[in-house]
Length: 170
Image 1 (cartoon, rainbow, N blue to C red):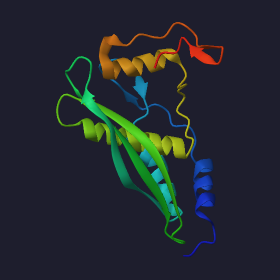
Image 2: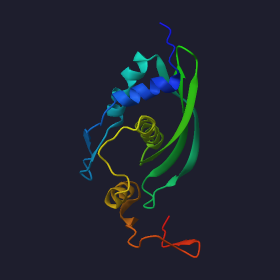
Image 3: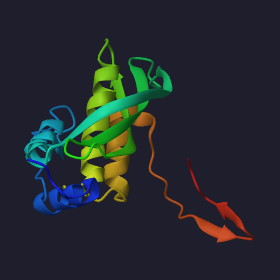
Image 4: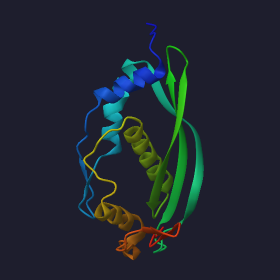
C-alpha cells in the first residue's frame, strides 16, 4: 500500500503516539532505576513498521577509547549515524547519537551501541522518561558508574565576566 505522506509526517505521527516510558530497570550495584533499551525499542519498533519506515545504522566512528580512571575497565565512546528510510517513497533522514560503554571484558562496544540506540530513539521521538538530565545528582551518579568515586559535583555556578566563562568544569 503506497502512502502519500512524507517521511517527516510519518515520524511526527509516531512521536505523537508514544507517551512517557516508565523506568523498568534497576541497577543492582547502585540501586537506581533506568529505562531499558528494550523498552524504548518496543515502544517504537511496531509504530515504525506500521508506517513502513525502518531505522538502520549507516556509520559509526570511535570518538574515544581508553581505560577508566581506575584502570579496571575499557572505556569506549562511539558516534553512530542512523538513517530512517521510508519504504513507500525511499525518502531518508539521517541523524546521530553517541553511546559510551565501559566493561572489564569485551562488552564495551556492545554497551556503547545499546546506549546509542536507546538515546537515538529517545531523542528522535522526544520520549520522556521522567528524568531531568540537568539534575546534578543524576549526572554525578551516572558519571560515578563509569568513572568511579573520582567524580565530584561542581559546586560553583558558572558566571560570565568580561566575555569569559569562569567556574566551568569540563
